[in-house]
Amino acid sequence: MIPPLIVERACELGIDIIAITDHNASANVGAVQKAAEGSGLTVLPGMEVQTREDVHLLCLFNSLSDLEIWQRKIDLSLPDEVNPAEHLGEQFVVDERGEYIRTETRLLITSTKLTIDAVIEQVNAMNGAAIPAHVNRSAYGLFPTLGFLSPRWNIPALEISRHTTPEKLHRDFPSSQNLPLIQSGDVHRLDEFLGSVYFTMEAPTLPEILKALKNENQRETHIKVT
Image (cartoon, rainbow, N blue to C red):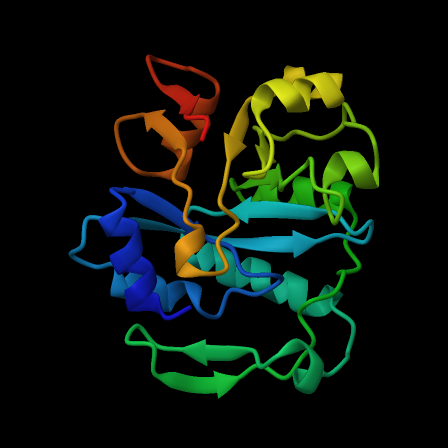
């Protein structure tokens, strides 16, 4: 998706804050942030990491510089394989106008060498947040893939896909009741925006979101079921 069109669509839907979380990649995050300047839309820097166990984790950070440090860790944990563009498509890096900069030739749609434990620990050490993504989904979802929540994992929430509800998740996976939930569109196309999570907070920042997830100091989180 092209950065200015992402911003335009989010603003059309009245969305105030999004996170860009490409798969094991972050090269386009800065472009979307630049495209959003002056629009009123906040763009959090992030990445969707595929762990050694084939589980997806949303990793959110406070700054683009933190994300760049994290990208270097991911680069070292990816296999040295070339992306088969003829089968998986090209991996383009663009600027804030959507103009082509370069093609990422390394295979990104694969598992890293990092375990879930390692990703959560290292992201937390950077004052970021690691959130298991689409935990109900059969492909790369935490519960269908591993079937449990570890007490070792210091995670602020679980993310559910658009294809379930909090009630159904709790019914299917009772241990999910121990954590707050967010719901994401997992947007790969402009018509997939969901925007169903409402935060009451003082500023559109990651620390404020984490407070809202804990319902701290009059911050709140609410999912609008669609």
